[in-house]
Length: 308
Ligand SMILES: O=C(O)c1[nH]c(=O)[nH]c(=O)c1Cl
Image 1 (tube, rainbow, N blue to C red):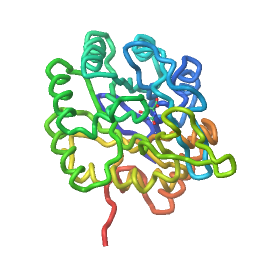
Image 2: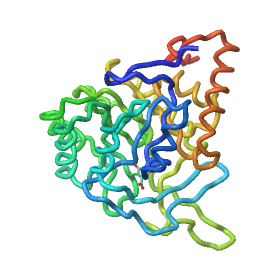
Image 3: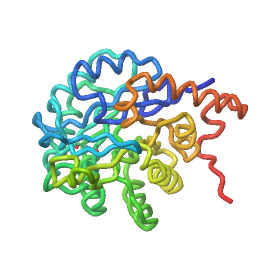
Image 4: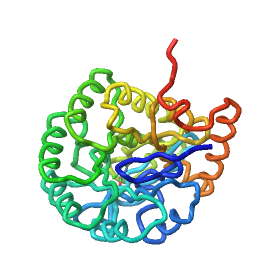
């Protein structure tokens, strides 16, 4: 089966990625990812200018149907991740970056531009958990302003990580912004922001930051993730690839993401639930589905979801 694709000048030998933030914050976690042969690429935890401890714990809670997190962007600081991605790796890397202000984003990306890093960078415009900070990509004007400033100097492969949208007009509006820039990709979705999980027995929230409000992931967000992949595929220039993230627990979910237009597919919550062995299971399940349908390559069905 042909699982190979190229993005931003890099060759990905498999459609699988780790979702930024999951098992990709420390040197040990990143080394673990290198050892997962079914992973096509490695995405770093979103890096900020300064290292961050993140929000108070408990800040992650596992549910039967998914997860809620209010991590608060804990990371070792961009120097650590920029050094990491400039080392030799058997797989392509995607350097995820986030800023607490437009100025931080510009400063960070100028460092990346000035470095010898030739791989992909992904600007996270959608973290829902930094207290007092908005999810930038819900503000279309600010998103345009940021991208205009970034592309005035940034010439390396760049994608953006988007929050989920829930209104068809909003899909039109964000696509109208993104189509004006030479992006390599869009990664959709980030967690569904500011959900709330209640422990009825304790009559209490389950995470400490923000009164228990946090980003939702896992099985429960799959229909939202598929809708965002599909809607953006239908609206974005073909030159902008879609990385599908959200709700993947089976090979059928991976197939669905690709059918909606995803080039690569990230797995987050399920890695926490099942461990890194999940990728071998997903690859087997996806292969079995493709063989049963007579497909030999992802191109045979990518973006070919039928309507009624
Ligand atoms: O709280 C986090 O660190 C976090 N959590 C998320 O669910 N998405 C993000 O982009 C980030 Cl940056």
